[in-house]
Structure formats: C-alpha cells, structure tokens
Image 1 (cartoon, rainbow, N blue to C red):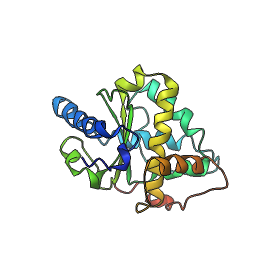
Image 2 (cartoon, helix red, strand yellow):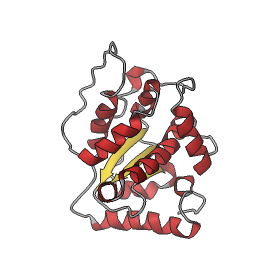
Image 3 (spheres, rainbow, N blue to C red):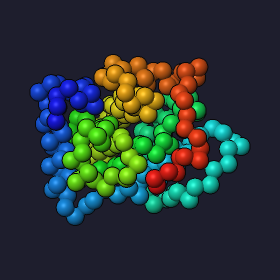
Image 4 (cartoon, rainbow, N blue to C red):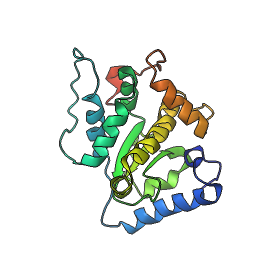
Length: 203
C-alpha cells in the first residue's frame, strides 16, 4: 500500500502499511466468514430512517432488521445527528458501501477505502459492482474503545467519504477530510445530490 494513501494519512508514516496488511491478513484468516453486500442496504435503510423529511415517499425494499449492531448503531446515529438532513442523503449514494467486519482494527475502529486504490480487497470482501468507496467498521474495536474516540474516528473517515462522493478528483488528505466534515455539519453548505431514483442503483 502506498504510504501516500490519503485514507491512512492520519496514521504514523511507519504504520500505514502495517494497518492495511493487518486488515488483509485478518480477512484472509476469516475463511469461514465473508462480509456480505447485503449489509449495505441495511445501513442505507438505517440512514434513510434518520432523514428528517416527513413527506418524503421512498419505496425501496431494503432490509430493515436483518442485522443487529447496537453499539455501532449508537455511535453511527450520534454522528449522523451532526449532519444537516440534506447531507444524510449523500450517504445513500450507491457508490458507497458500508460493512461491519468482525476483526479488530486495533486503535483504528473505522476505515474509508477507495476500491480503485485497493483492488485486492475484492478478493477479501464481497464488493458490489457499483461500489467505489468502502466504509469499513471494526466491530471488536468499536465495542472495545471509548465511545468518543470511536466517534471522532468515524467523523474523520466520513469526511473522506463525503469528500469523495462530492468530488472524486478533489485533493484528499487528513486536513481535507476534517474540513469536509466541518463543512457538511453546516446547514448553509450543501452538496450536489444525486436523483432519488438512482439511490437503489446497483443494490
């Protein structure tokens, strides 16, 4: 993994490769477990239910109660509350795939990962054809680390995600991700949204 990878730019330079290698090894060791893209519609439904539009009609058939991640959902919901409602729609973009992994990320409970920069991850995860960016959530790390630490990490990684969804060619580093998160929590700053009819594309 290139050490210039912006999605690991918040790690000490000497540990970036180690973290990604640990992710790959852990996934390889979990031969009996394959994260499934069926989680993705679950998380999209989770986000959709938190949109604050009372009159928004949306029929999609996404699963609702197929998975249970109480602690992860608690952190994710708290972070979502910081986003302007209109920005939550961006997380329904079919280019984003969200997966909970049963492996320990150590001190890094979440990862945002561009698929094109890490094609080898397709051999470890079931990646949807429409997916361009993954948000990976480490269940053991999230359940072990202090809640505020997890939420701070999640905000940062969502900053990377939202920046990519707004402009895949934008200069992306740690400061850009943090600035994007800050921008997305301000009502007056909106992204260009995808049409609602495209939200289920590729599911």
